[in-house]
Every structure is written in C-alpha cells, then in structure tokens.
Amino acid sequence: MIPLPVSVTRRTGGFALSGTDPIAAEPGLEGVAAWLRGLIPAGGIGLRLGADLPPEGYVLDVSARGAEIRGGSPAGVFYGAQTLRQLLPAATLRPHRGGGPPLVPAVRIEDAPRFAWRGVLLDVARHFMPVAGVLRFIDLAAFHKLNVLHLHLTDDQGWRVEVPGLPRLTSVGAWRAESMLGSRIHGRYDARPHGGFYTADDLREIVAYAAERHVTVVPEIDMPGHMQAAIAAYPELGSGAAREVRTSWGISKHVLNVREETLDFCREVLDHVCAIFPSELIGIGGDECPADEWNDPAARERIAAEGLAGPAGLQAWFTARMAEHLASRGRRVFGWDEILAGGAPAGATIAAWRGTEPAVLAARSGHDVVSCPDNSAYLDYRQSDDPGEPTPVGTLLTLADVYAFEPVPAGLTDREAERIIGAQANVWTEHMESQRRVDYQTYPRLCALAEVAWGPRRRDLADFEARLGPHLGRLDALGVGYRPPSGPRPGDARPGAPGHPRDLADRLAEVHEMTADLRAPRLTPKAGA
Image 1 (cartoon, rainbow, N blue to C red):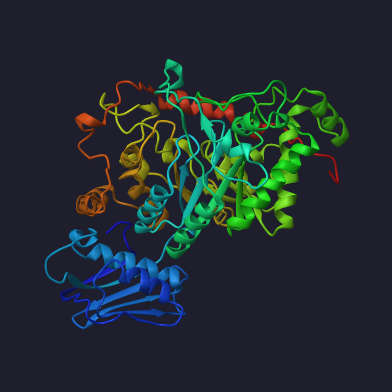
Image 2: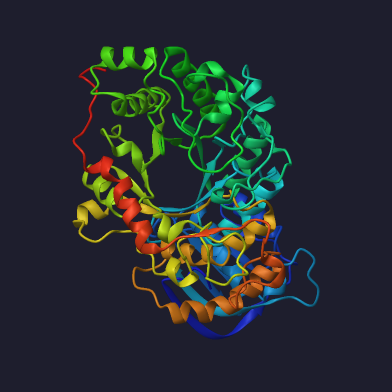
C-alpha cells in the first residue's frame, strides 16, 4: 500500500465483495458511501464515525464477515476506503472489470497522517488542461491520500479564469501565439497558438468534485509579477507600451503598476475567486517580481506617500493591501516565500520553495509553512541523466530523492516545527504539453511525495520500492502513463524540445543568492499604511 499505513496486522482468510448488499453508512457518510459504491462491488462494508480517532485517521477492519471502516471524520472514512481499494486486486480499479467477486484479505489497519497539508500544485497557465483532465488529476491525487490541489491559474503565458466584466482577460489573455519548445536557452518555438480558460461553472465543478474526494482546491492568481497575460489584455495595468501574452518561458519584467485602479482590478479578481473557491487560503503568488518598471511616476509617488525605502518596498506594501482585502472576506494569503522579504502579512501561509532557509525563517516568524523546495519537490525537474528523458531541465530529482525529502528543516524548536503544516509537490507544465507528459513527470514520484506527507518521518526506501512494484499495477489499471522504473521508453523523448540540465551545487549557490532578500534588513511600510 502507498502511502504506508501506521499499523498493519494481517490475518488469515478474507471475504468476497459480492455487491449484493448495500453499504451500511452512518448519517454524515452518505457521500463517501455513494462514491465508493460507484467504484467497487460494495456489499458487506460498514462505514462509521469514531470520536476517539484523529479527524483524518481511520481503522479498517476486514474479517470473513465483511469490512468496517471507522474514521474520525468523513475524510478519515474516505481514506480508509482508499486503503480498501488498494487491498483489492489491481484489476478491480479498471472501469470495466470482469471475473468473479474480488477477495479482500483479512487485515486490521490503524492509520492517520503526519501532516495536515498533503498537496500537489498543478500549473494550468503554462499549458492549459481541460476540465476532464483536472478531474482525473484530482482522482489520482486523492487515491494517494493527498488533500490539497494548489491550482496555479494565471501567469505570464496565459490567464485561465473568466472574470465577469473583464472579457479581455480570456479573449486576449488566455491565448498566446506560440510556445517554446524546450528550455528557453535554445530559443525554439512551435509556431502554434495555445490557450484555453475555465468558466465559473467549470471551476465550481472542479471545486465540488474535489470536495467529494476531500481535496481542498487552493486557487492562485499570481501578482504583482507573472502578470504579463493580464497586462496584454488591459495595458493600463502595466507600465509602458502594451505587451503580448508572453510566448517564452522564464520571468517577465512586465509587472503590475501600483496605481489605485490596478489595485481595484486585483480586488475585483480576488472577489470573483473568493465567490467560487471556499478555501480559507487564497494564493496571490508574490514570487519572481522584478522591480525594473517601478520607476514610473505612479511608483515614485506611491513610494513617497507610503514612506517606503524604494522600489523594493513596493511588493511588501502591495501584498499587505491584498491581504487586507482578503481578510475583509474572511480569507488569508497563501504566497511564495518571496513575500517574507519586507515582512509577510500576519496570518499568511508560506509556500517555501527556495531551499530550507525560507521555511526556517517563516516558521520562526510565526507563519504556517508548506515545504516544497525545488530540488526535492519540483516534478518538472529531470528524473535521470538518460538522454531519452523528455526535455531534461533542472537538477536531477530521482524517485529516491523525492522519497528522501524531509519537510521539517533541521534546527527548529518543537514549537517552530509545528508551523510546518505539510508538504507539496509542484507540477510546473512549461515542458508538459499533454496529459501523457504530465503523467510521465508526476508518477511515480508523486507516490513518493504522498508517503513523505502522510507517513512517518523515518522511511525505508527498499521497502517503498518493494511496495511500488504492485502499486504500479494499480496505476496501470487506472490508465496512468507513469515513467517506468527502468527508465524512459523510446517514445518518451522529445528530440525537438531540448532541455537544460543543471548541476545541484550550482543551483544551491543560485538559490542562496536568490534568498539574499530574506537576509537583508526588513523594508516595512510606515505605520498605518
């Protein structure tokens, strides 16, 4: 089973799921029962709540008489049901299964997760994924007991959210003229337009589907950087000449200006997002925002009026304004670790991606932290040095590397360590132009991350690899085009989209330089600003 349960006691015998008897579900568990009934022959299964269990914990008891799942909440019962699915023959996971009633082995499993946040980011801005693909992505994440989908909805290369009253965000901002083929250092393009967007109904469907599987969708509207697609749609949001939706990868210098009208635009977008997504946390990005264009008259006026030290202080000021607006709606900021520079808003949750230093600083500053350092959790990074790997970028990140990831950095006190609320993998899609490519880059490395986030701190790679073999049979049954442990297949390469492998030592040095802003004196807006 993956992730590995806390305690497994195996017994002799088992029972056959006949599907002739209904699931016996206590009140409040009707949703879990309906979901499970649609997936397996469900006779002889009882679902109960147990006040003595942790909220996401469960006990699965299988004997010759049947199976009982007792959970601390509907989520706990759901995770017990996912474990039950993994106990069945892999063929049971296929949509059209044949043969007789599947046999469930007799067993008692007691289980609960280590972390409350067990997440995965899906970037639908760089390459758009239709709704059906997102729902499938959620199903696979939930199968591995992940409970957060961080949905990266906007970036320089595409805006994916329809917003009432702002039609050009999707008529212009959702489409780019072409896409890069491979790493940006090669300057290759495919000469093919790309785009797409989600209506409010699309997003509500995604949210509801995820909620049925006990997955919270945390939306991200990246600001004030990574906004070139929005500026292409409404040039008055930026500084200087109008821009096209960005066709190259990398960081754009074209960021939002700091005029009041632009802040109102951001508030209007966030209001729309809050109306769709019930998540308490709302992502506003805050990463990779060059200050080059914050030398225009509006920026200089704002710097003087707010008593800021210079352009570098504008981002913290901007983030504070968005945090105030979200707070007025009962929401909190979720941002990348760059928002720590200058002081992140109180109550903000930090996605620490630039190594362990930001996670330590955030925890010591009283912020909740989601650990997702790039050299342990970025699934666009290359999986081996095999020349057949498709578009090999980033540092080497093998299955074993992901499994070795420890979300809680060394050196924190017990109280500080409690601020590390979990971990997530990030699926950035610059080089994932299709569902097939997403599958290849994501699995089975996301299986390893799921066990890191759910399971014990001490893990055994050899044991995990032994369990992974049968688990790949489950992924086969679910139709997942994962990367084989033996390496890439002949058809996996992308010779027309060359990569740019990085050395880990060079990358760590680069990250140290990138995080210098966190070691600089704090740039704090004046009191009352």
